[in-house]
Length: 479
Image (cartoon, rainbow, N blue to C red; front, top):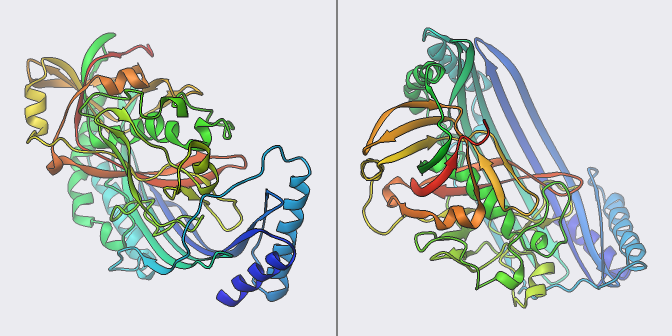
């Protein structure tokens, strides 16, 4: 494989490329889904190919192929150079890459049990046992389970002398119970964190142990009180915060989006470079740290597709807006001397783009449990899990739901609510945060289906958090 990559690199240079990089990437995927007592789907793929990216006359060119031969490697490199030269004829501003020292390294994520060596019968058996446990509960009419397993084996070389390899494994499973009654249908889900670890991340005992609770709460959801319309204090659990962080901070602080280079599908950003180091993004309790070295993090790959090592940096520090996710191309636009390593492609046939890193709300420094936070809240709602969401094209005005909702009165949970949504503006919301639980309650939940770009690319990243409180947030507005 290395011989083919170097051949493509040499071909691109010989034809006039000022810079070139080559990725050979093998993607193994296994996705299993179950519905009630049957298997509803198994997708098992093994895909490998080569992608060549070049800079020629200040413009990018890219080409890829699923055929790994010497002739095809040279053809793809030649095509990438031709595309770059054609693009240069309409270029308004040449691409400039910030420097990155060459490295020769390899990276492997933690993996004790290769998930692709575990029998399909064992995986299906676990999901069906969970479904059977859920369906035992009166009132539950539907049980759905899933398991997602990935392995990415990557080789990266560039004309600056970098030779990098990695093997990253990802494993996760979860399920949902749906109850029907009282003229309604309501669901409850359970999804432990998906991590870049082996099959050891699939905890069968934990998954089975939570099934009765999930089923019971699905039925309870049917008969819950309607969400009031008004202003409440919110306590959000780590799983709910995962999506809120992703949409209101992660996408807003991708530098290509903030510069207006990326507008397709997901819009631009209010967090423009003139606000960097000046905008009070959140309260003093809000520390949002990017960390592409996070053990188990879904964006922890050792290095990005610019060949930049994974790093840790502040996006928001003590509430102040401090940083972006960048590539080598856009980092120089705001005077950075080095990229933070946020440029990734989802496939050998995709050109790398700026992506959200592992981005987490850091836990509070003072000891604080969820129970203590609830007891200190007089009139609020505790929200667990993810639900529907919407956010405007500038990442300002948003609405989020959840998976389960608990009414808080006088420092106690007094019952379940349904049809809860909360609405706010990004900076108003994060500035309303007045407490975050400590590190004992920090959970690294992940996003599996982050879409960006045109053509669409799907990426993954982790957003850790501990339960946090947000004061005076509008709720129920969707009704």
